[in-house]
Length: 360
Image 1 (cartoon, helix red, strand yellow):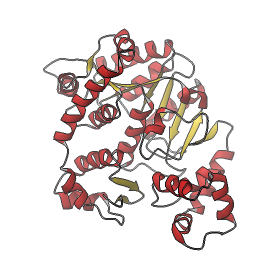
Image 2: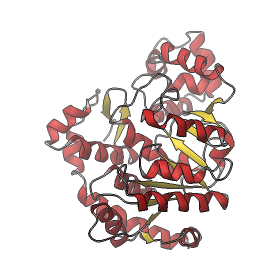
Image 3: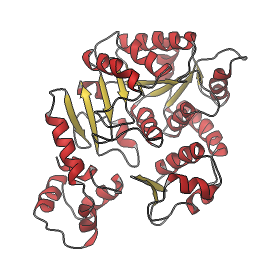
């Protein structure tokens, strides 16, 4: 439970723990042993261990022991997704309900509008079923619309879909997807989250969920999205990470086609069948880098200026609404920018808001 203990610390980013372990030549087990012996009376490790939440830790232990399908996958575990480790601040732990073996499968993310058309849902289901049939797990966010349709298609094969949640593992959001959540687990898939048991849905949880979806996947397929949407945040994150971005075109008269068409204009791969995805996955690394660079440049233009945003974040915890007020920008835009700056190592997300990292 060493990694879980560290993850329970309030207001401490992953990077701080990893740097402290390296600086003091400690393993996570040695750190936990020293913590229980109250060996740290001063210094960085004292500060870090004082932030550990025994309440969250007990909730995690109780949840883990309550069912055979409840698993805790840590950063040092063989089942921890390799691609997820490439994040600057990867989750120290993942709470998993279902089959942990799905986490090491190759994955493609399918994301899109919550208010998807019937045709959009049909496309998502068919693509997901084709991917799962070919041994690729479909990863999405358990939301309504395209997410739900993608998970449904992934159910065609055992272990064919992974739902990344924006809540604790014991809370399903939206509530109407309780049955889908159950079906995913029963079909050999997995529902995962970085949030501790008992943590309810908050607006800023979903951009963090999106970063996990993008990071775990070889590529992200977008089906129906508006220009300003959480879906495009996920696509931009995928591009920034050097992952493939795919988009299904639609009618020029449909508002939910605008996001897909914009992505295609920036270099995303236009796809009409699952073979288009498989063809692109094996292209040269150089071509993938060019595609990612094109999307990243456009993403930077649409985001807040880095200096203005950083000036709005303190070294102490700064609430998201306070940052938005200082930037005089909508909360959703600020959240998207903060997530991108977190990936660049400029800020860190902590309970209650964000903190500026030292030296930035």
